[in-house]
Structure formats: C-alpha cells, structure tokens
Length: 265
Image (cartoon, rainbow, N blue to C red; front, side, top):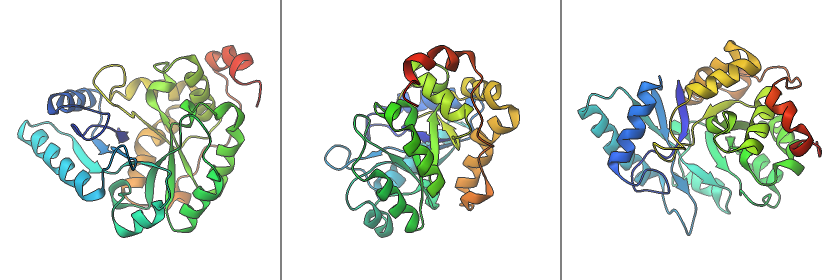
C-alpha cells in the first residue's frame, strides 16, 4: 500500500516529535504492508514555516536512517498545504512541493469554517495545471452544510482524500459517517493515514482497506490505496483513474447515523 499523507518527519510540525517516534511510525507502516510514504508536513505561514528544500533535506535524512536499519520503506516528499494567498506562486517558484514533483498536491482547507471563495481557489489551481487533492473533507466542521460543494469540486477536477482512521471510527461517529458517505457513494480518490504518531493517529492502513472493501469491493479498495496513489507518484493524468459510479451507501453505520449527520443533505 502507498500512504500519501503522513506527518512522519521528526520535529518539523505537529507530527512525529523525535526520530524515535518517526522510526516507530515507519515500523508500524512496514508491518502493515505499506511500501511507500509521502512525508507531508504542514506548510502554514505564521505557524509551520516549512518549504520544499527543507522538507526534501529532512526526508533524505530520515531515508538514510531507515536504510541504515534495513527498514524497507521508500519515502517521497510533499506537503500538507493550507489554502493561503500566494499558493500558486509558491508552487511555481519551487517553495511549495507537490507530491513527488507531480501535478498533484495535498490541499488542506480550514477545519472550522469554509474558506472564502473556496471553489474559485480550487478552480484557479486546476487552471494553472495542478490537481488539488483535498484532505480529510470528512473531518471538517462545516461538511454537513457543504457536502455538495465537494461534489462540485470533484466535477471541476479536484481529488478527495479520506482519512483511514476516520473510516474505522478513530475520529468518532461523525467523521466515520462522512467518511463512509464519501467512500461509499464513490466520491473518494485515495485513502491515507494523515498519521501524526504511533498512537491513535498512526500509520496503519489495512483496517481502512477492509472497511473500503465492505463498502465498494476489493478492486476499488485497491484503487484507493495502491493504484491511484501510484498514479499520483507517476504523475499520470487524473482522467485515467476515474471514480466508481456513484451509488447510495449501504453500510449499517451510515444508516444508523443518517438522522443525526445526514439530514441536511
């Protein structure tokens, strides 16, 4: 499996605080069948002042540590990029990394409020030749009243990344409901860990793969965790990897929480 959203680099953001934690997270991923991880620290001016050269240097250093220990894990670079002014310029100038140098980038919206002119901002990224992969829409506080916005963004050409732990209940019933809805209705391109530690928010992907298999079958679960992530690393055109035909969810969990979380949609 391939994990394209992981805060694995030590001491660079709110992810792994030390090398020992990074190594524990890496061991957990390897044991779970993960072969490649994208190191994607936050880039958020005023809080996490990371940039492409610094992320690449930290990634190379961690890869050396893994190699010296004989740990079979390939690291690539990226960033968990916040939607801020100057984003397109930062990408063009090489200050902000895309995923493995591809056209794809992780784009993190505000957790608490919908960004102003969000759809316009995403459209401008796409018009500039990038494919934004919008991170964890299922965990945003405003998803209840804006689910259709994400569907329109998919129609524009954006991709969606759901958190593995959200699909298995790690983030509670509300996030699980929306994760199952995004995945089960065929509106998710990739699953990723968004791991920050070796504890609750860890690097294991196989439980989410099993959950996706129950919702969509083994073939689409493979696409979520292997085929589309690999397509991103290969910088393949997004239209080569379409979503499954949308359909209504059938899981017991989604039905149970529908009266609470789904009544607005």
